[in-house]
Image (tube, rainbow, N blue to C red; front, side, top):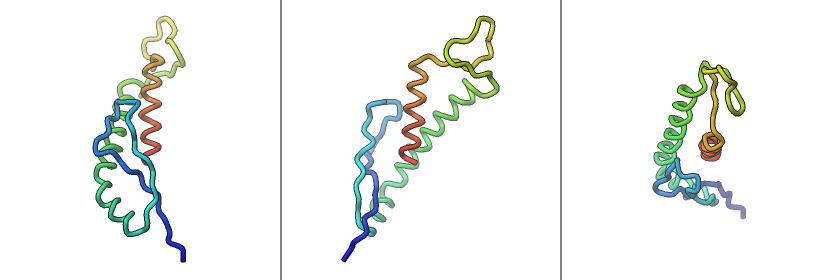
Length: 104
């Protein structure tokens, strides 16, 4: 007799999306009924986190990238309308993008 198992993340009650070391929680597998119960309980929190990440990414895009020429590294002298990011800002954006992908 085979009992199907479904993967689901054991989310922390609160997740600080700006903390690059915050634990997303382990993935576990549950039988269908337990998975459905856990999903119903955790879906709202997961959606709030995804909304926060989306808002962060969208705000950065609209203020820093949209309608600007893209430059990898420092902008050339006199290029005021370029989307440039420091290495720390690039890393921060990568963390937020990856978290959004992982949790989606």
